[in-house]
Image (cartoon, rainbow, N blue to C red; front, side, top):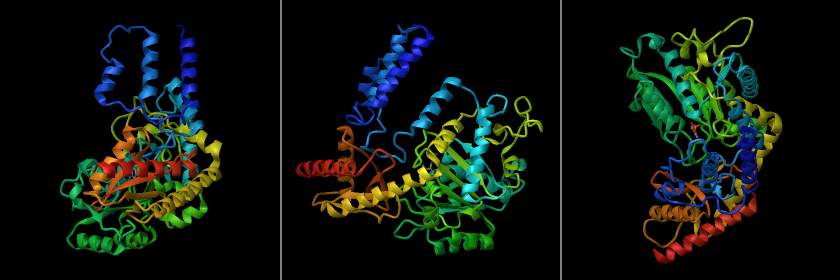
Length: 469
Ligand SMILES: *Cc1c(COP(=O)(O)O)cnc(C)c1O
């Protein structure tokens, strides 16, 4: 087969896959050992054989999870925007690294442009930003900026002999905060988990007394993160009271909007959920979650940055690679990035931004909220179901109740059955000691009828499971 035929065949396979994306069950479930056999991974008769390549591609698509399917309600993303998919294909075919202008001129310009758009939207003055590999890394970079600002000698001499640094996060903050504290030499014991109220929002008084205690013991409260949309409950930590505390204690205030940060697209939602954001020190958001770009698509912004990226992140001799020339008037993004090679994530981001526009994305979020209100009403109406936590934004945490043994075990089993039967894939998470089913609606093709079907499948399966429990 000629290369051109290979590519045409691929596009035809992909076109069919895309057409059928909403059909049938979201997964044809196979156990790992079944898959191992089916895929015949040990074959060694395929050198130069395009037929084998296509067999594996077809199998990948067939046994993989169809994330566009309306019953895939498990994750913070579902399917992906079509413009961004086109961008991904183009990026795959043209294969370059977005670390330098030389190797990625268009991408560098697009990324800088998009960062400026986001800085403006959020209201960060004299800010800077970068695309990272995801909010986990963005959280870490924010914490790193905070660390090096609080302990200025760290970059050269490490943390030895410094006053102990303490960070503070919502006790339901994302686990990447712990990983960051580990990697950065802060220590996970020094990442203080602040108690939350019954809506899952960080308690301001608990935070202040924890900060005051650390301060009086000679520790340095260097970092506080507000979560804008916690992963499990969708709670938004109030930013304004943190600004007051920052005046007093001088920490770096980061806002983790990986999940709920998309509200910046709508003036109404921005006011409702993240007032005060424009005075934070840094902010991250995953465009690949609620906003629908292909995975991964993240940005990190720093307010009034004063060259913090160069000070904190640049390092080592990159002269073989980086050419920051006045003539280009554009910085090589790789020089302040944590990795050397950088995937081009800018094209899909830019295409989505242009195709949908801020207004289109704002409307999308409003419509997700509508659906969430609807789903909440369904839970209220169905006698077997109850909310585990009040709905505060986009997350619906509920469970099946009844006269059976351990409710956690039951709900986990219920969820597994729905998955293996290909009926739905819903998330699970603990809220305190209660296992909740976490319904997330981030698929533009999902409507009320899909939600009805989701709940009726769930209740039907629940009744069957009750009968045998
Ligand atoms: C998803 C999530 C993260 C992690 O983001 P990745 O892009 O997957 O690394 C961080 N914080 C919150 C609140 C999240 O929901």
